Image (cartoon, protein in one colour):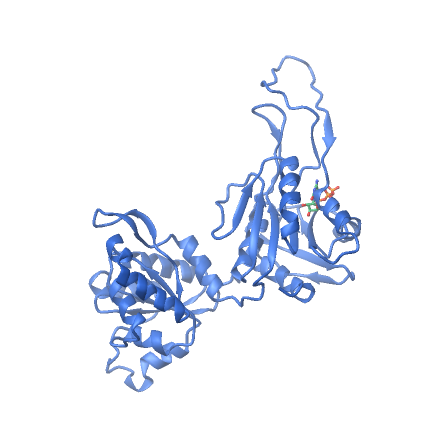
Length: 403
Ligand code: CTP
């Protein structure tokens, strides 16, 4: 199960050209097993039909506050009560103005007033309309009332103008949704997280690398941020894009990673080292491509700094920063993991099985065993990396410093 599974989300669609994108978002939410209920304004129905949105959401679409069907159920109050999140996308200047002034002249604006669930507003409109002081003042009022605003992105608009006014991409909005649905129990805590492999250059074309994708470290960074933490991510070469609202530092080699970890460590209360750092790198890096021709070739390697071990040693008897390591093991998992926990002076070690077809590498799922300082063992089931990340963060809650 993912983060959004089982969450009851009302998506309020208003009358803008971006209404068709709401259709894609409904599909994305349902793929994650969220329960989606669509409420449309009359203007929205001119851009996208209720039939389309009903088929995609799997439920009838509500439009009319005075609908004779189910009138006894008082739709605006019942829908408002039954949702975990009200997402308004696209939100036009008109709907934003109504919401900012507490008007409730249609079903959607009435639900927005009546609900106690978080309200996430995604404005989308012509950039002049968006930048107009009236719209900006209305959005500011909505922020003051506790609404979350996912600002539009800049780009070419359907009307030919350029500027801010386009809906953000799904990845970004999904982060806003997950954050709005997640308790902010890590607010005020600064995390330093490393992710991905390191590449140790042999010559300008070749390097020693490993199969880490960075997915687990990025999932941890995203999960901590969703829970309100400030996150710095130091990533080795990974195809994943920089996660939203996270300071991401890209590095290549183990030596570079060590440099940035030591630079950033004094700001962090928790350091999680999910990166698969190379233990050795070539003694020298050739500035030209090494030519073939010899029957054999010897590559001399030199040991890299064990970054986590250095952090554990410099922390000594202090409790901070909390240190979490990953142990990539293909056999004797528990014994090796426990040994690393002690040798590196860690608070938690997360043991990953990297052998076989269910290997953690590059997979979207993971199955880990967590061991804490007292030797307590927590075996997690096979879960998405995002869910695994949240379960791991849960284990940190009892030992967190107060913000
Ligand atoms: N680690 C590190 N610096 C290194 C090597 C590893 O900081 N040069 C960290 C990893 O990020 C991970 C933990 O140490 O959190 C364990 O890494 P792992 O590769 O499982 O073990 P090693 O300590 O390298 O030992 P071995 O390769 O012999 O299993």
